[in-house]
Length: 322
Image 1: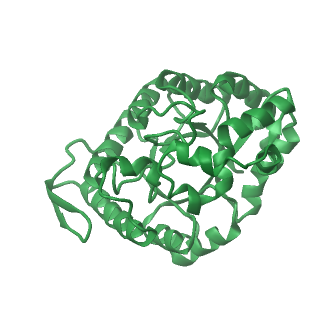
Image 2: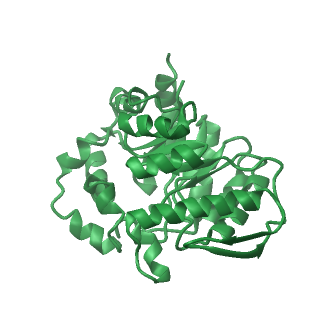
Image 3: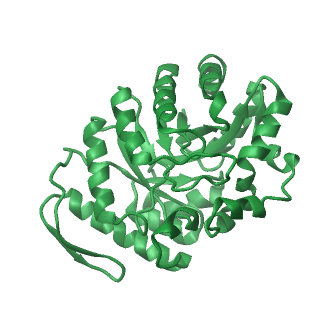
């Protein structure tokens, strides 16, 4: 049975609400929780972007059983991989072994802030591969010195290490990233239910490993209100990953999505009160190569408590019917 997760969407809520909501999600019976790791929101209308790692630390203390995961962190620009290794090890300790480090090659939106330009995709994947090598080496203990084409590490050591290192998931969107994930990751991460991603991941060595997807939806008792919220808060996603990885600012996404219509969004995103419609959208991941996990994004900060309550009574039971 596919495990169903809750998304702490940093772009649409402040840190205290995110922690409160994940605690509610645990009580409601969600199987796991993920968090986005952004410096900017996608759109100015979303209006938030707290530091994900502080939120994660608080979430680890506010919850008891629910697994936590970054979806995803980029360890190649804004964060040096040696620092990511330390942060993830600390999270594994704080959560008593409930943490998964989700990694990806990032988006210009969040990584350009430290300067130095935005590398092309090929270079980003080279950097990601080096980053994973550094992270795993530091988790083994001892002093690490590393000389790579993109990163140097000088006599680094992570002093507080968990007994079991966190699993590493890796974002997949095409042949190169699927190959990288199949060779280096413990799980595949994808935001689209494309069977070919799983096939390429398997061919590169990922067969039998978990596959973690994510879907945005808008629960509301009024379908029209749900559709309005979808177009206001989430119209950016219709541009596709090749566009979303390159644009530098929320204003860029506002401009790029200026001609997106309400029907363009609702065609790709379940909206409204119909449980069956939401279930059908989530089931697409099961049909697309057997995703083992699907994290749900409820669009709209003010609707989280209502959504979590509805999920507990209606959505989760419907999804768990074999």
